Image (cartoon, rainbow, N blue to C red; front, side, top):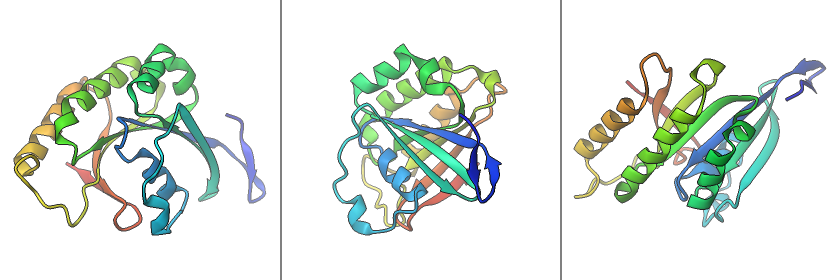
Length: 182
């Protein structure tokens, strides 16, 4: 990606790739990053088909955010041509819907494929967002603190030694909030 003019100086385009299962919250996170604040923008978002690339300027930089559709066909397309999607990427954010307990194993399987498909030496910043971790989250029989602790343990086991990454609990409840998991 070529540098662009932002406030009179050349600024690099920062490429972020959002990936995860359908309905994990990728598009909602994208809207928050773009500064969209109206609650109506988050009601019944349409599923992303293929790849939605949004570009915008913020904090003296230009961002290109690639929101990858989370349906199986689109995720499989990502793995068929990883280099196309990864080229020029500064950050990958893998999103897991914390409230979709029944699909944790599928999400972890895709996370493992993503981690194994990228070159660890290419300098891509990697984050896992445990999304929809909302302040009013009510634990039930399927989702409780023990399940979340186990999920985090399983995520950590996916990453090879010396692979730098972060795990964050996220919510759009307060427009967008991210808390690092230790």
